[in-house]
Amino acid sequence: MTQSRCDRCGASGPAHDFVSAGTDGTWRVLCSRCFNTEMAQFADMQGFEHPSFTPLRLRDVDNSDHEFHFRSLLLGDQLSLEAFELAGDDEAAGYRFQILGKADSKPFALLGQLIQTMKRALSMKHLQAEAGRLQIADMTVRGRVEWNGDEGASQPCVIIDGRRIEWNDLGAMLLAFEGWQFRLEMLDPSDEA
Figure 1 (cartoon, rainbow, N blue to C red):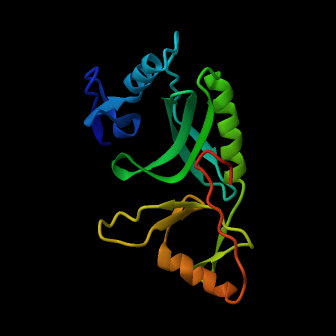
Figure 2: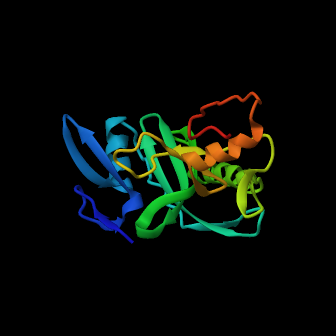
C-alpha cells in the first residue's frame, strides 16, 4: 500500500487519506485530518471534529463482496463523505460514492445516507456477460467517466458496475443499439445516478 506523509503534522498513512492542497501557489500534501483542521480554521468553525470510519464490506447483486474505504473532507460550508474501493498500490478503482452535507452535519447520519446509496447501486446490474462478452443488460447504463491512465490518450474509460470498461469496448456494446436515440446526462459525483 502506497504511503504518504503529511507536510503539516508529519503523520504517514495510506495515500488515499491525503490531499494535495494549495494556497498562494504553494502546494502541500496534507492528511485529511490536517486538511479538515485548516478548513475549519479558515471557515472560522469552532469545535469541528474530524470524522473517521473503518472500512466496510458490502455485497452486490451477484454476491460479490466489495470493501469500501472512507474519507471525509470539510469543503467550506459542506462536509464531503466519500466511499471507494481500492485497487493494487492504494489506487482508487471500482465503485466510488460521495455525499455532501452541511459542514455541521452529524457524520454518522451522513454515513447512513451514503450506505443506503451504496446499497441501492450495488443492487443493480448494468452489464451482463453474453457469449463471453459484456453487453448492456437493459436500456439504462450508469457509471463514471475516468482518466484511462495514458498521458497522451484522448479517450477516457468508464467504470460501470464497479469495473473498468475501455471507451472502445463501451462503443462495441452500443452497436447493439444502432439507430436508437440516447440521452447522455452528466451528474455531480455527489448526485445519485
